[in-house]
Length: 65
Image (cartoon, one colour):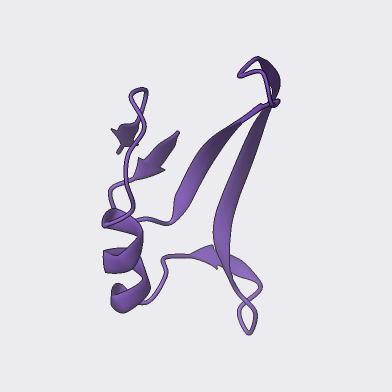
């Protein structure tokens, strides 16, 4: 996945495996934070951004500016 340094936009990749350990699905999810009052994209509160930065990173993880 990837995430902007300010955590305002991100992409997560999920890989699903069956009981035999074979990869059966790859799901890519893109997201951004929306200010519901201004109806515009925004950055998350610092506490949430800090929590996002603490999530484990996969081998293909990158920060985007």
